[in-house]
Length: 106
Image (cartoon, rainbow, N blue to C red; front, side):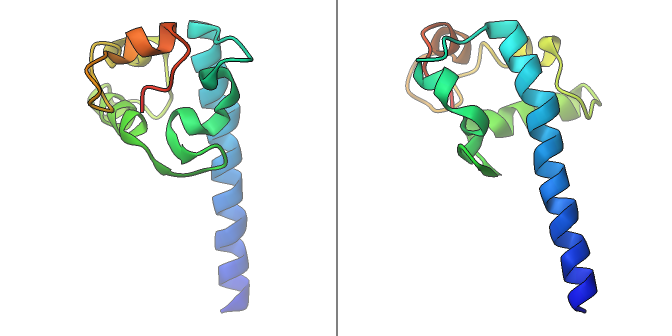
């Protein structure tokens, strides 16, 4: 039982690292957020509830839906573009507008 839990923990950490290593560069390449902006400092918090990862925020869930619709397991610039017109956090501003302003969309 302990061995199974240890394996699951290792897989979870590897999955988190994989998301960071594949999603963040795609996001940064498309939007080039300023490092001193809230968006630039957010790290995993752009799509997750915290900067360390964990549960997806509303923007992350919208990206997840867009990836599913595109039948993709990889984040692409086209998928990011697909959610720019949404208002994931419901504040009256579209995701694309918030990202351009350096604010968190989720």
